[in-house]
Image (cartoon, rainbow, N blue to C red; front, top):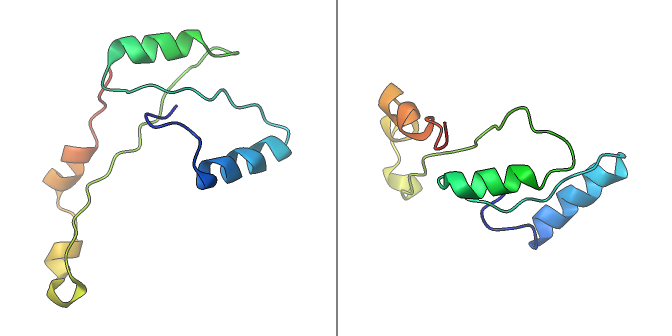
Length: 88
């Protein structure tokens, strides 16, 4: 499930590789922060979904010259900020 879709070259490549292995992919577009989107997407699957893994991250952009060890080390609050699920 993706918020932005699967039309980009990287997504097409991954889909091609997975289907070449004989797997089926339901390409669903939904925003996990909107329960109605998730409910609708789950109703469109060809097999029941038993779980969702959400990938979230925190990006910090900084010139490498100013990049200190503390700037590249994640603290517990940093991880907790990205980790909570958006949909219960």
